[in-house]
Length: 338
Image 1 (spheres, rainbow, N blue to C red):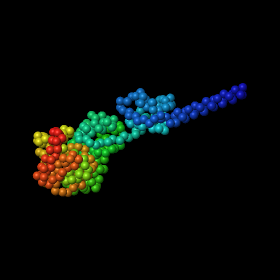
Image 2: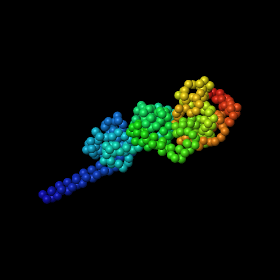
Image 3: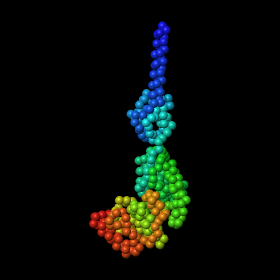
Image 4: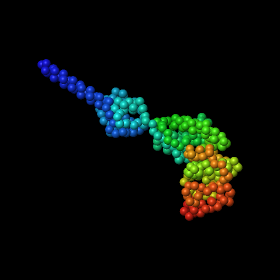
């Protein structure tokens, strides 16, 4: 009898130890089979969450027990999560319940209008393009931030890569970018800006024209200098990119004479001074080129007929006409008519 009891005791101890070991491994051991990014949106239900998560983890029974204990089905948070190697069941469930997101990198560049920016952001954040464009064109928000309109508020967006939570609200996104904008305009930049005689929106507006004229960073200060000379002498800027913006036809490769009469405040052939707002999101190099514009006597420039991205500069109109004819001849040769 004593031997039987001893045997039962030993079996019970062994079973208990086995259960304890199973529990330790199942709940606190590495549960990740392969690293997985999870995008849990407002439209994701619990079953969809499990369908996305479970193929990438093990210890499903332990996961289900702990998830039920924390009522995960009713309390998981939307967001961007990364299930990393080494995480255990407890950590994964808590991450989803508490909304412990991993930020995403949001890149902004090469956009010309708020709708384009909204489209790019919608591909990187949970908010859709309609929600985003509504905020980007919100007149009240623009006024709150000290801008005349949403089009001038567009100048706060600086091309770069930023960290955001995937679920950031559009209003919070714009507020964060406004902080980045104020940080960008530090003391040194603002002192240079004052020497140009332009305000911040005007700097961004001129920089947007410079950026659309040339992508050659080493040429940007010279192009900016041409426009500064024109502004100071009262000449129209006559910037071809403003015609494209006015017509909302960004694919034009050749500006025809008929386009120069297009009725728009953005047409710098018929309106003196800067257009009402930036015509694109200028690069930081273009902004700095305006702040550090090259001082010279050039009043004209024209793309080189070599199509190398650079321009020929001229002090006189007659020299400019000669440069323009050479470029137009090359356009004709290449059959670029519009």
